[in-house]
Length: 331
Image (cartoon, rainbow, N blue to C red; front, side, top):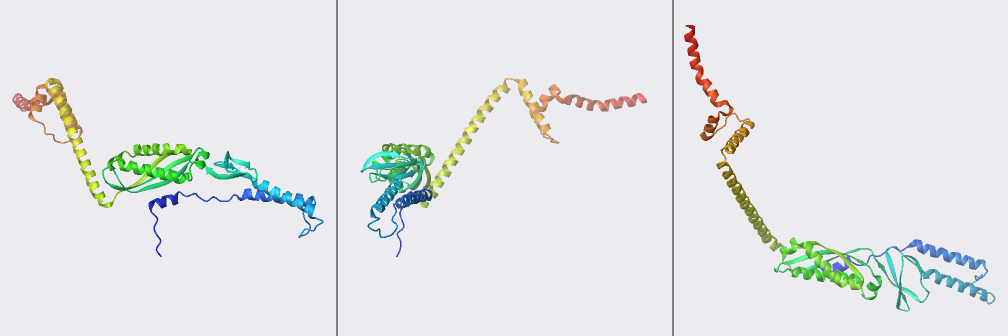
């Protein structure tokens, strides 16, 4: 026989089912010790039946001893204990009496009873939506987690049949509504705002139940494989478009700066010459053995004899003439 696979709703409720707690053996042992001590005291007073069945002579004393032991049992089991993070909702004859705990507390025998023990710690419940259409008609599966706590156990127990299931279903409904009212791109890019919106919407409902929703976080968004390729191409085209736009804007800024530089250099010859020297200096720093310099630059440098180029040229021209003069003098 084939077992039916549980749907997402059933799985969510299964994962959020109440966890079974380990029994408190220490408190059970304490109760047992009290009962043993009470039985020893009753036996020491001679009120415990010596033989079974009880004879007619021992019946009055034995009856008193048995009655005392039964009362002790009732009193022992009327003492309850609640952990630091738990609160007990106590009813008296079916009517709400009070919230008890943490620690030891006493219930009137046969009158009071604990309707439910509520955990007031922060809880985490996960939930999901089944194939919901976004605002732009894209089917998605969304999974999320809800962080919440009970701040008023009385309201949570008395006004809601199952407050855990109520929180999960309210969160699921709010998530489905948020998915259907936003496009996929908005849902992916502005997830923090959508999470805050869902949390506020769920918290409006649960506040009346004594429950506060602290935070809702989207953990996973699943898109059909048929749409993933097309969405990837769209995203790639958007990135290329953005890159080209940024490059064009950078070129425009560079051109404006160059235009400003041209205006400055055209009106200031000294600044232009300093720029020429800077270019030559950078070339010499790089360690190049040969530099190609435009004629216009060399002419500018020649007029000012920068680096002694003109003097060096005159010395080279004068060298042959000086040598000829020296030869004539020796003769």
